[in-house]
Amino acid sequence: MSENMISKERQEYLQLRQRSRRLVRAAQIALFIAFFLLWELAARWNWIDPFIMSSPSRVWETLQNLTVSGELWRHLGASCAETVAGFTLGTAVGTAVAVVLWWSPTLAKIVDPYLVVLNSLPKTALGPVFIVWIGAGPSSIIAMSLAISLIVTILEVHNGFLSTDPGKLRLLRTLGASKGQILRKLVLPANFTTLMNALKVNVGLSWVGVIMGEFLVSRMGLGYLIVYGSQVFKMDLVMATVLLLALAAAVMYRAILVLEKALKKYLGVSA
Amino acid sequence: MIVALERIRKTYQSAEGEVEALSDITLEMEEGTFLSVVGPSGCGKSTLLAIIAGLEKASGGRVLLQGEEVTGVSPLVGYMPQKDELFPWRSIRENVLLGLELRGEKNGERRAAVEELLQRYGLADFADAAPRQLSGGMRQRCALIRTLATDPALLLLDEPFSALDYQTRLSVSDDIHSIIRREKKTAILVTHDISESISMSDAVAVLSARPGRLKAVHELTEFRGLSPMERRDHPHFHAWFNTVWKELELGV
Image (cartoon, rainbow over all chains, first blue to last red; front, side, top):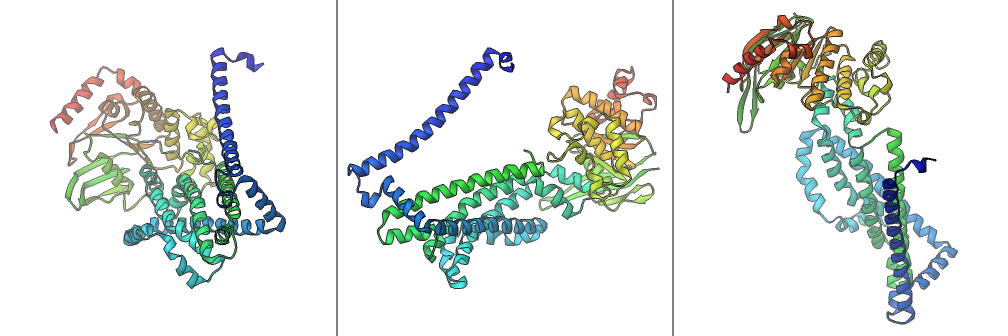
């Protein structure tokens, strides 16, 4: 019924949009298939050395073996857990510190140069330090990923807090709001997007920290599998793990987007 | 006497030096009257408002509100900012209740009065809507009701129409004027728009360019009881406009 009421122009517009969307999706899938197909064929026809470059079929076989032996879930689970702990801690602690700095502008001024230096320091340099201090285990790996995400989070979130609309701040002050009320009623909700962006960036940074940490600690996890695979020259294992890692990171990012949407709806935050 | 300004002075200090913003302002206002403060940009009129609101400290002189000296933000004062400043993540009702919420009186005795205000001024149907769903004029009305919600004795309006386009501005100023009259509030409006000042108020105080000094206070007794629109059509409106305009000219 309602379709009859759509004007011809509108109909054409909708069709065009639909077509362009389908085209993009088809091209994406084609690219995916072409990549793996080319890789497989190149390996079979010996354009590349499958022992060094591996191939999709060998990767597939490796993944199956890993799944059957149960090792896949153990390593994947360990890395994922460490990553989740890393970005959750990074975002939470970073936000807490940003709140303290927002609360005390003098303190913010005092620590500013230290934050700048820490921010530009390559955090991976701290890896061996963590291992000595905390021990070669998951705690060191989480510390690593926390080190990578924490300072950026503090700087970003603090900046967001500082750019809260001065007109709205003034309004709250005329209504007699306390500093705590200003934080809860204005600064935090106004910076919802900043916080979510920090969380999203931290998912990526946390993966970097976890893989780096696992390279160093080398007991379990996807980072361990990659290092182990390259040491014993099982490139199939290395490639399989890298693909798995890409998948895990993508799924985690998707999950954050879903979480963001749900939170938005729950808190009634828009724009 | 609801408001008395006694020799108010304000000097801003910064690393570069000091700037005198306001100089020796003395003024009195009766309960239930509407005063406009008009002056060129940067004459310190918003500063004056901030001092009355207790947001900023005067460098000298004092402000008396119902006989008591202002030392900080007072619950007697309601402040309406230039933009509506409605929080986009709150519904209209939650926005309007903000002041009571901050005082921990969200479900207190004023609550019913606020619901009535929403009802009386045609916002009850939009109470659960988000601010972005409302027109600029309606949003400004919400901002006024948010200010009235805490039942202040004195309203301070800081160029509340400057963000609106001309057409909306005329009808919104009519609207706001009638609400303030109906609620029998005392109000101070700060503006750089001469016609706005004459069309809205019982008296117009003219400030000079920086440092702001009080040049004159005009009682617009003949306009009493007229709406802003009616005043703009009044034969004497233009004469008043010229008087104020010339006073502002001289200060340049």
